[in-house]
Length: 310
Image (cartoon, one colour):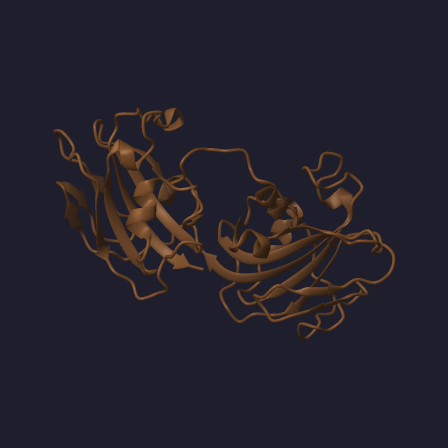
């Protein structure tokens, strides 16, 4: 769970800038081939930082897209969360400067299909995991007259996007039922929390109800989760991704998560379900989290499904 709600970072905003339209008629067969109609070359292995050979001058007018590698994995659908590696350049025919990159930020990015700019949604929906997509984006199909800091209103943009994974809206771990400090979690795809009456324990506690066999969550890795959180005192569920939204992805070890999540999830393999009881010192501390009705004295309970680790 995030420490607080902050304004989007430039990287997060630029991630919403991928705005290719329909796939071009031709598809280049492999990375390193010229992009049809774009007059440039993109080289490098899928999932690795690409190198781009830009031609002289600015790109042709209009929004252009190509697929250099076609994957054989799951097909992206509306309300999926796509996990991607990407780079974004300003294509001006001179410096063609890099303005954002998931490689620079140290972890893949999570793109909610259906919640992005319309062009980006069109570009990602129907793509398959394992695909590399490139796109040249004119200002009118990007941010228009109100771009974020670092991008001018007349800047043409160029992206390379590698689709690493896809996670459906209702994804979950088929976990078993379990208990911790009197808290009960039901079995099945969407676990229900039952918080007992009475005072909460004073100490932090966590347990792995279902242990997966995937890669382990480590600092610097992106962890894709579904979760539900409740306030002990009121036994009220204040947030749940299973009903309120999509899977959420967090980077461990960058200071963006509460202490309890960092401690409970580190070392846990993908495919696991974790239950934790979180006293204030391991949660939001004295300030609480007013947006969710959490006071500084509240003990919290979380059940977390670790869907994937990248």
